Length: 149
Image (cartoon, rainbow, N blue to C red; front, top):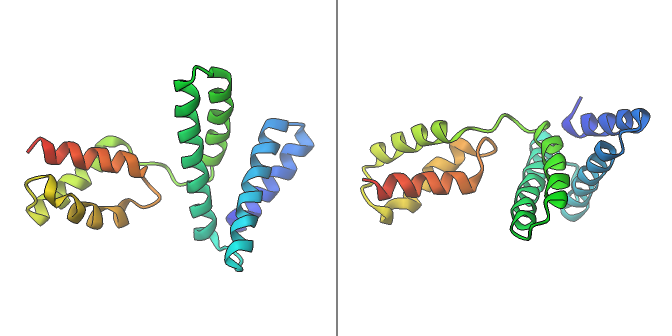
């Protein structure tokens, strides 16, 4: 079963259970997947669906931050619930310590000593953590490691 089919089946199950929050979140995901398929005029494989899911998760994280800044806790909670549903379909995200270990190894391998080499480090690091770590976290970790050298 493909990832897209799994989302569709889970949406049907949520409808049968009467779980409207989960149903609505999955419907939004399916709409985003369909929109990407229409825009690119292809049927997405699992990797393409994962990319759409990562984009949706990133949007939710940004919305949560915006709602919290605005003092809208109830809206942030709704976005957080959707984010948890989306993340259940994504591979387990790496923690800060794991990203630091990989980044430190790449920095040592390249011999980068200051922030000027950040582009080199990011260029080599991002393919290794793509889909497994948030880009903002990776950027922050690399910047911290380079500034503390």
